[in-house]
Length: 142
Image (cartoon, rainbow, N blue to C red; front, side, top):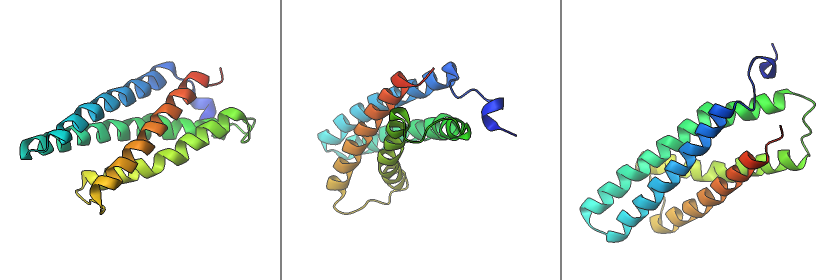
């Protein structure tokens, strides 16, 4: 059965909720970063819990909207793999994989060394991925 025939890639509710979850996760990440800068035991604990929440929201968005949408979009063979939208969508996906993998590692307290450097790299890649994801959202073909 053709997946694209049974589900609508452009389901406005799911896509909007995914974008909303990502912006809530971004807000949590900003708050969490503020707690990390205080550098007390309590603030680091709050940082960890808040960033864990941001990670969970991101994973929900990825697994319930982004991955299914990607498969549904490419299930339709008429969608050109080399179109500007497709390249943007695939770039967003490729840039988004490392920060997701790193945040899951952090979630399970598997911190790479030097930790501060890797957290900064994660933040930069995650912000680029969110920006690209917003561009994907606003340029989706109708």
